[in-house]
Image (cartoon, rainbow, N blue to C red; front, side, top):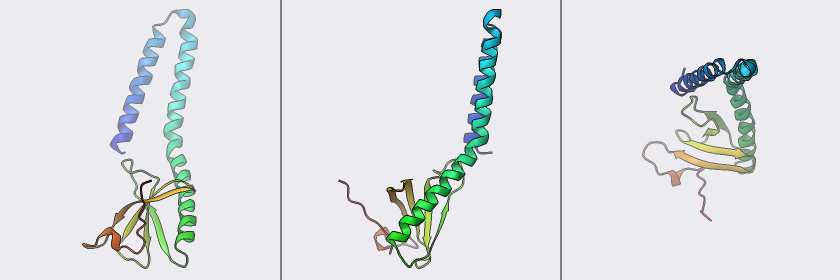
Length: 142
């Protein structure tokens, strides 16, 4: 388990325990509704931890399709491989592209939506400058 996930779980457990503690010390009249509310919050937290990985995988698959479409328009008749770095410390929406005709180079694209796709990082092979890349995309600030 990644440390970020462990910290999120610990804070969630502490939060829920505090809420249950407060709910137990409320007057009898409102104790039962407050326990129901705290139980509902607990279920929602558990659902968010369970659903999050599937939601991210779904979003990544959509963004991979969008990037694939972008690359097909920008670089026709070329082949590439799209992957992503796995781990909570990495942004899941930054996708790595390795072109078949440019060995050793990695281009990282930031995919916001189908209209906002930008090359954000270039990892050149052995001592070359990023401008020397065949697929380097420069952007002018407006």
